[in-house]
Image (cartoon, rainbow, N blue to C red; front, side):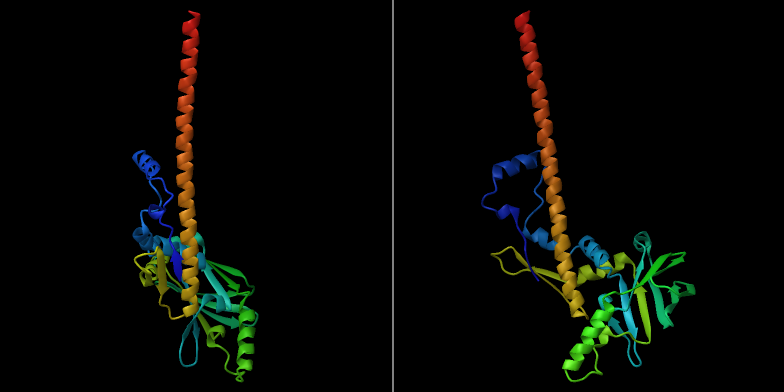
Length: 268
């Protein structure tokens, strides 16, 4: 992806005298230059927000007859999650093996030295454990993607060769990984560089074994970057407004006092 970064320092209509005045008063522009903004795009904190928003801390693996295959979460028949409070405190990976049994599910759960088996007769369902509450629900988009894959295979003249990533194997293996660990991995896998020395356009790229997931991640990363920038600008504007209002209030108060004192002096 290519991202236009608006560098405030290079805007021709920005008044340097006003900026320097506010900097002396403790206010600083949210943009410290193009190079700094490029670094922000590859930070762990931004990656953490993106991973959380896309729930990429959960990995889905379809167990096949010969080889296991990782599948993108939105193509998984079931969506597995851990409560938000628990995912923040998770230190090790939780492993689940999900098997369909009639209209329900049989789930084998492993976490460190703990191993347990649970059955769900109705879906969605919640499984309370000592390390957090696990939620399992059907993916409403799975049947749509599966049907789409079947149609694509039919048009290709091979109705048996349905796209693997949209198919469930005999067992669905799910890994719920610590948020910080996943965020660090995603942050380190991002490459951000300027397209040239004369522009403020950054090229953002990522290598991923599932290209579609990598593309979706970059799109969401840029969205969250923009949201953070807007929040930062709004916060700065609010601080400036509060500061000006406070100064005007003091000046108004002093003027009123001066007028009152002058009136009293004339009367006396």
